[in-house]
Image (cartoon, rainbow, N blue to C red; front, top):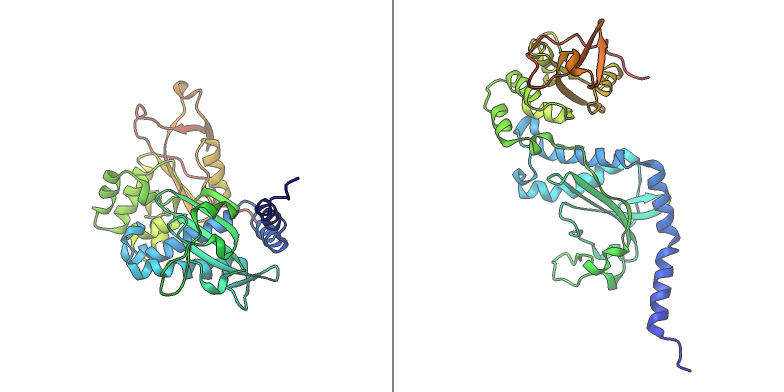
Length: 322
């Protein structure tokens, strides 16, 4: 009888070690407990990219517009901002201590481009990827093993994970949705029309006029307005809400009353710090099959090209959930 295949035994043992890695499972459970849906993680990545773009000052909205030094700094900012959001303890050998376990954090804008330093060998790495063009992000845990790394000549001796061994990454969230960068993904003709206007108020009016039924983040507003009082430029009393009311355009914010309007009209509900604009019309027989909402005794529906412009109603009183 032939002896048991030693290589097969090693593979089985390696698979068992990976599956039963108690530290990895503990950190995995801790992170998913802190952020079951990944929404907090996604918000950190969105805010970090926006922080790098610094649209209020620069008017930039695309990753490609960043300087090389800024892109290099992205990993450090992701590491810092994740620690602030989740209050991870400082690590001794690695970046963090999560559930009292040492964890290093590595970010790459290019999937698979994580650079693993020599001191991380044997430790857990939190691998993070985000791509603004694709509006996608991923985060997973990886136990660093020498045999799973590419051998390279990087002067810092940092190595990447062999493509064949990326299946050793235990994903927390894989190809999750990154909150959309509206300026990056809007029609180029519409974007050019927005930025062609001279004043911040005019640009914001045009943004809400051209980008309807989509969530628009506070950072997009900041980038378009390029003014420190950018939020004032959205509100009534002279802001975009006032300017566009005559055209029948509502601009809903993150108030519960506004979210209710958006929901009843079948639109995306604004999340914290977001806005959704839409042109409405008084509902008639032709709108019978459309979602409607009653405001001040009149039913309203989302307008289409056959509805002539008419003044929009006053949005309900601003209230936020306690």
